[in-house]
Amino acid sequence: MRDPLTLAVAQPPTAPYDVGRNALAHAAAVRAAAARVVVFPELSLTGYELDASAITPGDPRLAPILDACAETGTTALVGAPVQGERGRPYIAMLAVDDGGARVAYRKMHLGGDEPNRYAPGAAPAVLEVAGWRLGLAICRDTGIGEHAAETVALGVDAYVAGTVKLPQESALQDSRAERVAVEQRIWVAVASFAGATGGGFAPAAGRSGIWAPGGRLVARAGIEPGDLVRAELR
Image (cartoon, helix red, strand yellow):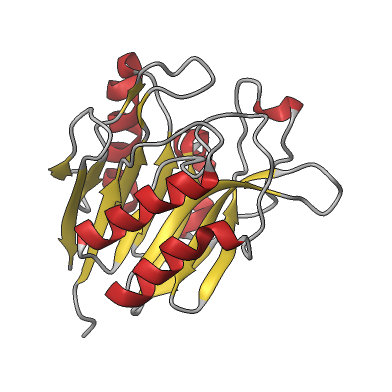
């Protein structure tokens, strides 16, 4: 039998474009969460600023997050733009732990103005942590039924996403998460941006949440930056 997995969804305060400052906020959230996995919103390291410069997993500004993960035994799933192979960047999720940082997933289903700057990722991805297989998603991915189905087909225990939504889209965000939890009978965790950021998200919705298999909401954050909640996945 696997041990339970403690997972948190966090809404750190984010300064536009300021990776160094935002990394400190991420590190503080990792320490406060006391969780094995902490999920952060879409583009959490830069804010939802589509013209932000791409970063690399080896960026020295990520050091505070690496240090916090090493101290706490946490894997942090962090949102960032990363450079692509042909010059166009991706919207990505970085996995950060005591071994360093790496690109864990590239957003497949772009929306709004994103296709004008970013390339879509090619395939679903799974990250294994402490024997738990986590399917990864970013924002609009969660609204594409095929994305969840293809991810779950890889064999996952949970579907975790970083998002950014307007307050009036909170119900839509919830319904997407609940649908995956009901249809796929897996845990779902959504870390949703809170506070003001680019792209007209002023403010963003917040209200990050964690749903149990079958669709029951087990943890809910508020609308403020700095909120986080966690749950024990069994």
